[in-house]
Image (cartoon, each protein chain N blue to C red):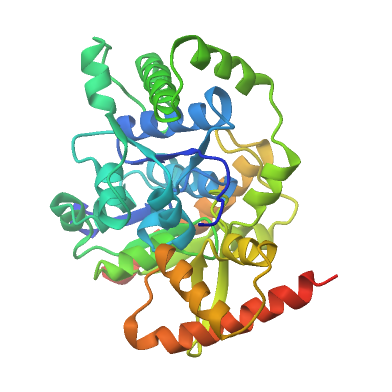
Length: 136
Length: 244
């Protein structure tokens, strides 16, 4: 995928709850490990506060949000910033599908939480792949 | 005025995932919240704050906040000011890094040693700011730090905190007004105070409730009657529930 067909990943950024940590870890796994050449991480606060550079990074590229909980702050905020969301994921949904992976810890995730982040990241990576194909 | 829970300081971190300094802000905030001043601080979740989380915005309206930003864009400080009130204090990681001559910070996901040092320094600075905001100085602050390391949260305090939807310590209550649900800040505390002072449901009490509720919540003039009706209904429920 060429740089102008990259997919933007926006995690929820929450630091108060475990699910926020899982969303961030999943996002890092996608952009650093699974799809480093085709994805880019953009911070939610920059987008919402109208940072031109962040908005330019998102404009014209499919955006995938990874929310911690059902409040879906990342998805809502990207949409309210006038930008489309191509796919949205939540840690809560991933956990519902993998009840054995109960995440714990905020500063550092327990092994189950890390595994959940990996599973979610793999789902996101697949979506990135599909979005890349649909753009070609 | 209702008695609100123990004064705490809100910590808002920029948490910018795309840069190492954002990670420093996050790690420093968590260090203050979990280790240095766990009983005196609460986190204000920046995304929820931006998305209109009433509890978090309410906290920042009542209590002092410290913004920790990764860079000069100061997203956390700007967002706090935009949606609630000017932060009582603000720290920028890049200033701390250059002020202490730390090496380049690397690793958005896992900080290098310079990044961890920066997080420690920022956390210490925030803890001092928290002490200052809570009116502690010198020995008193040192004693508080020792107490923090050993103290348990009292049952009363836990009960007050559990009233809040976001964990920030401000009690809130959802109420149906004109067919939609609104979150009213401090309402449980207002009801409790009215009830304890012997005020029972009635037109006069409803008028008073409306005035006190207005101190903490914006009530559009055209919706005053609907708010009054909702407050009267909820207060009646409250009194029935608490009647011996």
